[in-house]
Amino acid sequence: MAEKRFLRAALKMMGKGELDTYHREYYPLVKKVLEEWEVSGKDRLFHGATAAIIVGFKPGASCPTEDVLLATQNILLAAHSMGLGSRLVGFAVSTLKESPAIKRSIGIPDDETVYSVIALGYPDESYEAVAGRKKAETRYFEG
Image (tube, rainbow, N blue to C red; front, side, top):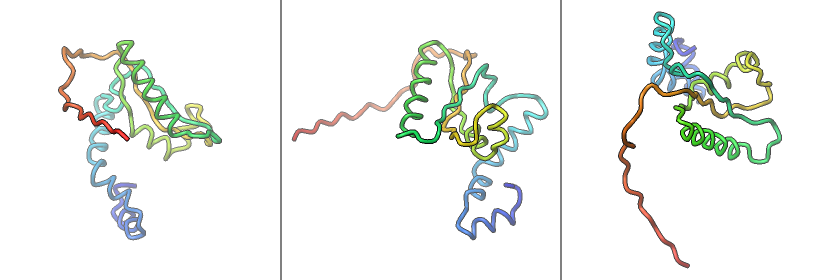
């Protein structure tokens, strides 16, 4: 759909410019990555991860977004503590939201919402030091 200029323009005129933004900001890279997959089989989305965890919720949860965000962070921290590499795969989340058939094919019911996909595996590289960070600004409030 992103390649259809008329569709992008029509949606933009109706106040739905997301497809145009996607085409401009992401589509060239996505197209290149998909072509690379077709030619060489190189996986630039999951980076050859041996597993993926899909985090979501069922209808009726009292605070689903917070629960999913906390669960995702805990999974990422646990993976790191076990020496695993992890990566959030946002394009997989978008795909699962846009394609119920793919969601169903991996056993997720239509009424469940996917919020994060985490690729897990043993990293090929190790780092000797943590990347530099800005010093945290500490503030105290009395009152």
